[in-house]
Every structure is written in structure tokens, then in C-alpha cells.
Image 1 (cartoon, one colour):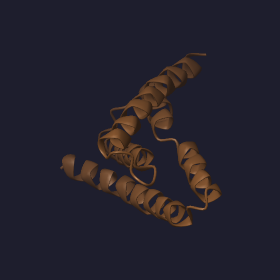
Image 2 (cartoon, rainbow, N blue to C red; image 1 turned 45 degrees about the horizontal axis):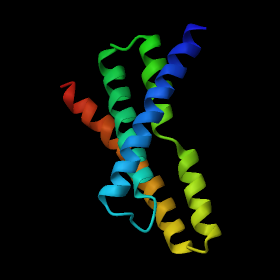
Image 3 (tube, helix red, strand yellow; image 1 turned 180 degrees about the vertical axis):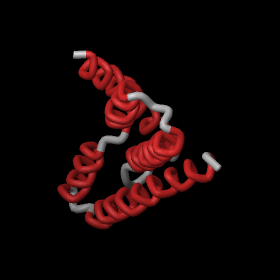
Image 4 (cartoon, rainbow, N blue to C red; image 1 turned 60 degrees about the horizontal axis):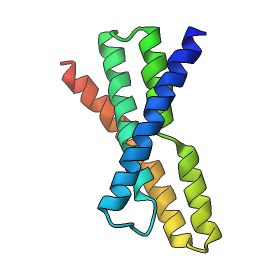
Length: 127
């Protein structure tokens, strides 16, 4: 029951952060032609999970409860690829195929790169 509470509470925090940050990015860039708010959130979340996981592996400082709350809860709620999938299929459904393909390429390639970069930076910060 404790694990469910930790994940659920973290998921609430992450989801609220995602809502505010993605909305802010979308408004800041004056409603761009593809879902850049979700891209920004996914890149930030991918970077953070890579960085924190790198720190956790190097320093062994995060207990299982912290990992449940932050990794599964907060970051799981924050970096939702369900929003990515929904927005991409919506673009395709609207026959905006170029935007859909750009969204797929940027989310996947840059997301994987952000995880790698976060882990790399964590390794250098441990030195």
C-alpha cells in the first residue's frame, strides 16, 4: 500500500508539472505548428531520469521508496508518451503528416540522446 501511495502521489506531482510546463512552452512559442510543449517535457524528463539514475548508480544514495516516488511516480507522470502518441496520431488524422513525422523523429532521437546525456553528466559529476 505504501508503494501505491508513493507512486500515486509522485504521479500527481509529475502530471501537474507536465500540464503547467507544456502549456507554458506552447504559449511562450505562440502556439507552434506541432506539439512542442510535449517535446520539451519529454526531453526534460528523459534528461532528468538519465541524470538521477546515473547519480543513483554512482553514489548509491536513493532508497527504494525514493526511487518509487521520483522515478515511477514523478517522472513517470511527467514524461508521458501517451500524450506524444495521441498528438502524433491527431496530426496524422488531420493529414499533417510532415508535423507527425517531425514529432516522432524529435521525440525518439532527442529523448534517447537526453537520457544518454543525463547519465553522462551524472558520471562526470561523480568524479
